[in-house]
Length: 476
Picture 1 (cartoon, helix red, strand yellow):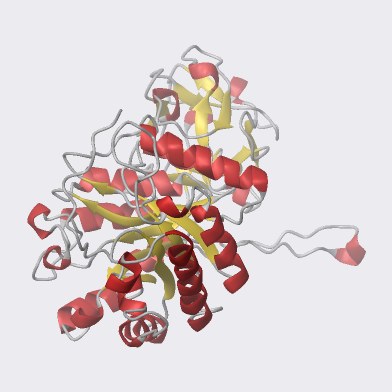
Picture 2: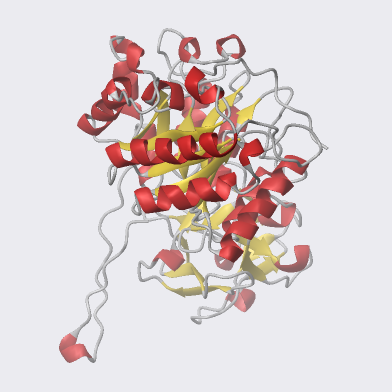
């Protein structure tokens, strides 16, 4: 169904909203609203910008590059999460059966912690980068070796790792939707379930993830097979907490706008999602911003990890796929990502402006110029009246008439979008994205013209983000 990624080398070098306090008032009868604290200015680093929405922006680190001052400086400054590129894989942590070696892995882990970063664990069970002794095993012996390895590594890092990629790349490339024919798969089709149950027992505090590539496009057979497995696991109580999308976008496996649909559909199963190994051939600023906005639009998206610091550190350096050039200078893609993480690169002017629907050409409008709390907003011909003038504030509000806020009356699909007296709640805060979507901070859902309507009087609601023209807006 889908194209496979470009050829992969045999050994790959891969390596949430400020909760606003409300103070209950006199004798518990009269509530007093406390003015929100001053909004923070846009952050200047990727990790800090991501942290504004409770997410991380991480990087894959190689232990042997930490002595490179440019590399280490960028990594320490820009990112708030770290994944070991190779150092926590099977061959590195158990080179001889029963003899664990965490020296390189601990170097990455300790550097991350000393620099105030969380750590993702990668990876526990994988068909690749197995040491020779494991490659020689099969059947029940290999199954036991997998269990012993998971227990050994997770015991060493118990309580210290935020997420573990428990199983990596277990589905076949191409259109079959089948499991990959690996030595682990040949131990029995339940091997993935066994790995997750073993991992939960070994460290109940870690999020347990399944991680794979070429699963970003919702239409692809591999994506659907992974979805079916996760759905089955959730239905049967198999302990899976998250799904990692590697997101190596290139000419053989390009970014598709349905990636957001993929993330949303997996999240709807009750798992978190994460973008775990992001690199983009040619480092398109637009594609990088789209990927970030896709994550920001899905409330269960934990964060994003790029696979390497500079192009010269990438396992696909010839594709120049990362955010920093070889000399450590920032690319346009870096700025695009930072702007997206900070809430979009464009906002309405401070003195107010119209918000026009891309699909309809009509404006976001308060019917009959009402000022009554609870009035649902609509589409209407643009006329620049005060009921169509919206000001975006530093607190993330969209204000009309100066003291009324665009307000979400719920958090589910179809929730009414109305005007209400501004009080600082998260249901009155909006993220304006560079792709034209307007996302509710509390709900993670998009400002939507109901039924893809374009006529005067079309109601405005919240709905799962789809990148449709009825969810895209221009501001002037």
